Each structure stands twice: as C-alpha cells, then as structure tokens.
Length: 314
Image (cartoon, rainbow, N blue to C red; front, side):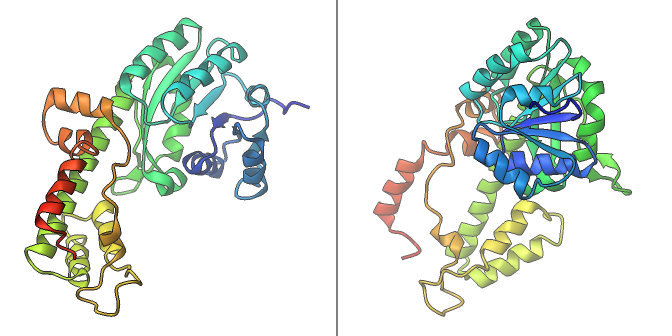
C-alpha cells in the first residue's frame, strides 16, 4: 500500500549527509519521506536513527511521490553527475506542475544551469543548492545556498531557513537565503570550496614550516594551533588540525617530541578530480586554482622532489 500524502518534504539518498539532513528536517517538526535505491538502507535508517513519527520510509520513487503533499518538494542527495540526470528523468513523469526538485550535491554549476531550463520546460521547478557544514552541519544546521526557479523560494524558505545554521547576537539569522538564478547557488558553493582548499593549503604550509624549519614537535604544534584557535583564526579547520596533532601514531614509540601523529601518516593522494572548479578558478585567477586544480597534477613532482632531497620525516 502506498503511503498517504501527508509528508511536507522528500529526500532521496541516505548516505551520511542525506541521513543527517533528514533527521534535521524531522527535528523541526516537518514530516519527511525518505528513499534510498537500496531498500535495506531505508529500512535500517527507519528502524534506527530515523525511527520517529516525522520520518516515513519509502521503497520506491512512486511511493515517495505519493507520500508528499503538493506542491511536492523532493531533495536529491546523490552523487553529482549522470546520476542526477538519471534521477531527474525518472522523477519528472511522476511529478506534477509546480512540484520542486532540489539538487543538494556538489554539482558543476553549468550542469545546474542546463537542468534548471530542462526541468522548467517540463512544468516543474528546480533548485540547485550548495550545502556546507559536513555531516555535523547537516544534522545540527548547515549553510545553504539555494538558487534556480524563483517561484520555488517562497515554498522552500520556511523549511530551509528552519534547518539552517543560525548566526548573529541572538543566533536567529539563518545561514540561508536565495542566491540567484539557475546555477548561482552551486557556483557560490564552488567558490566556497576553493577558498576552503586554499585555507587548507596555507595550514599545511604553516605546519610544514613550523615542523621542519622551526623544529617544533607535534605536541608543540598542537599547542600553537590551539592558541591560534582562541583568536582571530578561530575556525573549524584550525580546530581539527589541532585535534589531529594530538592523536599519536602507536607505531612510533613514546617520544612525545619526535613521535609521529596521525596527521604525519596522511597519504599524498588527491581527494578527487575537480576539473570544473579548477577551470572556473583558473579563468578568474586568485587563490582557488592552486589547491583545486593542483590536487593531483603536482603529485608526481612532489614525489620526485621527495626522492631527490629525502623525506624530512625519515
């Protein structure tokens, strides 16, 4: 039997981010229908963390659509790329005029530009939304960057601003507002990621200089990052750098000054290709191209340099 149409929001994709966003929505008193392409994942979620009155599990996309009150609001938390196009093609004939599709992945902005036009031509509304904050932010309050079909914003605004992080003296200003047309939200998220990668590169360089030129051990480095995190550099990235420097590698012995920490063991591998971000960052210059476009390209050179001059940790 298909679920009754009494849910206010739908979410597709129950990986970590999708699960936590669903729980965030439900925690605001908003009823949410959830679906994962693997039914056992849906069942595990609704029997575990999602076992609560505001969460409805669905085994088919037809059931998900049937569970939603019109205008239906369906958020897709699936891997960016062809999977989003496939899902849109499957959902479009199931939805009605005025229903809203939301892409919450790290999508290339040009794809969102194209999809907005295609979905609007089918009589639906489309929103590309950057989501920042990681799994903890998804659960407790992310930063959201929606854009796309303007008519979707009045419908989505109450829910999205309710689940977003809050700032300001009274912690009542939501970290969510309408960014602009079509791919604007994903473009802002792309720039956000580029700045974040630039920050990470600067942190890595500071770590390397303090360790290999300044001669600081990991405990001293952790103290330095802890102190920085109490001032104007207070941030999530400085905080987690401090924390990882305090986690000792059990294979290196008891010397607290020269013993390696888990951060020393990080493999020189890229986190994944970012051709779109590198292209746009390179077109406009600035900090973004270095860390984004160079994630994998300079790795062979770094390895040759390490062989030539030796690994300073050995």
